[in-house]
Image (tube, rainbow, N blue to C red; front, top):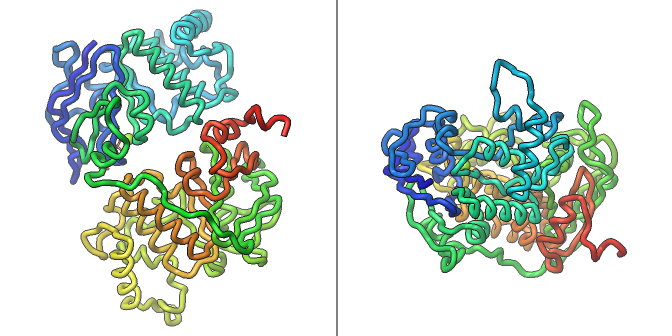
Length: 507
Ligand SMILES: Nc1ncnc2c1ncn2[C@@H]1O[C@H](COP(=O)(O)OP(=O)(O)O)[C@@H](O)[C@H]1O
Ligand SMILES: [Mg+2]
């Protein structure tokens, strides 16, 4: 089946998410749609999947125009979508989930479980998915859960399968397995749209790469001849430095010392278990791991946003296990939070206000309880220019800035004072390639100024490139400490998945 998008335009209030987009997908090929956060990739696929009505333009299947008013229409026409967040019932088996996925045959009708089992086996064999119909979803690794979603799509006989950022939740070896499945799908005559913001992945799997910038297709490239820097430049609109530039660290005294840290939640679930490590002045320690293995809770405990259930945390030898976030801030701890919207910024306040948000208590800004706005405004002007924050003015509401510029506001605020320790969680999540380059260079500069730096990131490539030492977290524990210069992503990936590289078994 040949799919054509012709002149698709989709507007939201104040933004043209898709601007006269033309794309073609032929049978048996992988089209990678690449673009920065906010470029319009998901919107375009939502138009294709019948979730949004385009303001202009047509969808054609084998040359004839189609109008989809709901996902059901798109599915009936042979379009399948695997969302980033799976829609599976954790306590049900694979077969039970598959049956739910193709319901209803009658009002909550009988689950034809034997039939579902048979179909799962058949599809699994045909596409080498290696799925056990009787396995319970919650026992399966994320990569295998994703294959259940693929089965659901194939059961409805999709001719075109759209994957929206499918690799974000996978380990390196799961990504390789996923690419094998994609190859099987296209050799069986399906068309695949693979959405990503990762250059290497697009180059690896795509037959063609279409680059989207600010809602427009700015060009198509051939992965056989294109380079990463060429595509990055198309995505951003200017040349981009893709490699983290740094010299080896000269680590000094221990700044952060974490001993047997354990974090339980209100239900008694263990998120962090007996974690111990140190971060020295002038070094970057990275924490790698698949999302959801306790990294979030670790950072929250270190920054005082969550109670440590056991163990101790010291900063320059002072115990701060039970001090509040403000006390930690005053001891020279900076926090670049994972969730910008909820923890990092106050959306209703201006850029200037956000730039001084955590400093209301610093002497420089307050006389008793009164904030010195002249001083605050002067600092805001300096930071906006120093950190290249693109904003119409410092009075602009911070919520209207792009993700990359919002993140720069946080980085500017957190790094522009004398620090002992910087904790950065997912520092470039949702940030455009251009701003990533800048944020990385600021973090390295901070290290070189003698600050201890802890980076937590689920982007393996990022955390390996930035760190001088690398810890791997799996199910709440630190399962490995590695030298990133002497390790490969595959090795680190094995620890991330809970196994150990063969070479380490007897070590
Ligand atoms: N439902 C919506 N309402 C308003 N604006 C939206 C909506 N969905 C997306 N946008 C905006 O459209 C643009 C494209 O977003 P999106 O398609 O999600 O980009 P991508 O998937 O490439 O990151 C962004 O500016 C985003 O803020
Ligand atoms: Mg998206």
